[in-house]
Amino acid sequence: MSSYPESFRRDAVELVLSSPDRSLRQIAQELGVSHETLRGWVRTARKQADPQQVAAAEQAGETRMLRKRLAELEKENEILRKAAAYFAREMDR
Image 1 (spheres, helix red, strand yellow):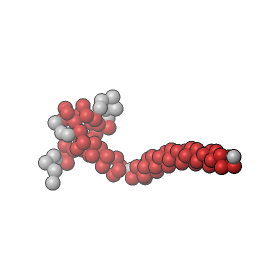
Image 2 (image 1 turned 180 degrees about the vertical axis):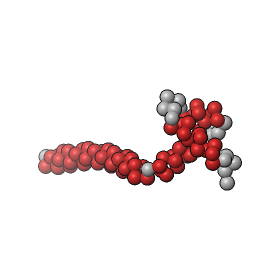
Image 3 (image 1 turned 120 degrees about the vertical axis):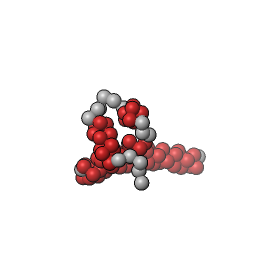
Image 4 (image 1 turned 90 degrees about the vertical axis):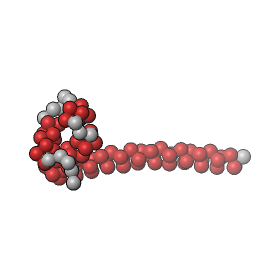
């Protein structure tokens, strides 16, 4: 059970969302809470506000990660192809 009342949490989240020019860490320090605690409250509030938007953002992040991994694997595959061709030529000598 949290020691912070729900109204305090709600106000803290609203402050973070309405202050894009201030860092979460700075706001947390001003409120006297851990920045990780405040970040968790903000994340929870965002998920409750629009779960579809959160899911879309997570999918976009996963897509970026998978595309990056695909590019790495394609590069590795090309290197292996070139190495195989090189060693095949060396074996023919």
